[in-house]
Image 1 (spheres, one colour):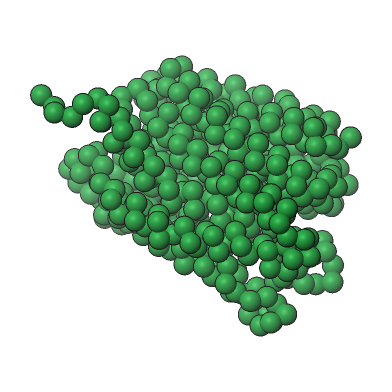
Image 2 (cartoon, rainbow, N blue to C red):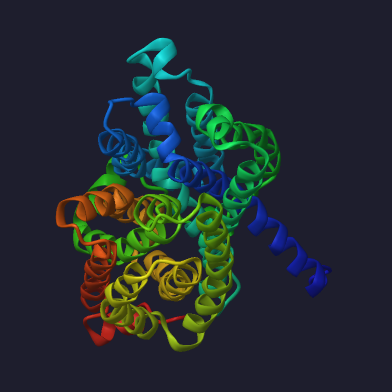
Length: 431
């Protein structure tokens, strides 16, 4: 008979979840901060004499970090499937910290010339390499420690930690914009959030070092070599591509309603920086509510119904909602539209993350999840740049809504493919 009380066991689970998702918080915090201050970063590292060109260069470097994710997923994912979830999560945090420091400390173009954008790009690439497996490592760990019948709820906290990062970064932006004049924010104030991220790193190392390996990994009779992991990924390429399609809906919608909101609100809708950051805080809080709620719902009704309903709703409503916003931009309309898109994203993603852990074979679960996620983010991560370009080329300020609708079509097709047979539906049903 176990001597551990139910209350103590529950408290231990909560502490474990907190330790696991802590690094995921840092990864998303850094990505959000870069997106929020893309305009200031453009002026500091990519001066061109043309505001549009400078902003596109800045947003392209933001997206470039996602280009490294598939490589990180393959290399670090194979490492985790071979050597364990705990070791991999500590390694990714180390790489992420180095990349964060690089972006925070590099002098501007006016000081060191072309070396400045090169170093920033290298920092972003390193962040992307580590992030390529961070999400997968965290999601797999949570799915393997989840209690029976609650995998959706547990896995939702992977994305939940990202929303805490969104809120924290946006609140910090609101405070800085109130304390510093716009000129000082453009000159050096934007660096403060990056430096705060660096100060958080030692604390994150401390709490992640206390993680234990998952029982499910320890019980595996055979731990695949890197070559075996790669061979299994090739063998299961259809599942990986299907997973990529599902994740595309998540990454496009997430970066559209979080990282791109301050730029969209300021540059396109001509709203104040404070207004757009307040909206972003509200979106992070909204996401944080819907993710665990709908993760738990998917535990009850299954992943497939939730995924289908919310991809269809997105296809039908994303563009009309954004079009309604741009006709008469205001703080109230921006908040209303973003909250609706947040509901669509949070509800879909609450079921999607756990679904992706379930469709991947256990021996390559981390590498398969991470590769599918990373391939999708190489496209979805460019959402701020793609949205800016679409508006510039078409003159349609609501074009980002179309982009989100296209991503939702990919998510719907992928869901129907992965759950195409009764056997697959039974295999992947909520348990």
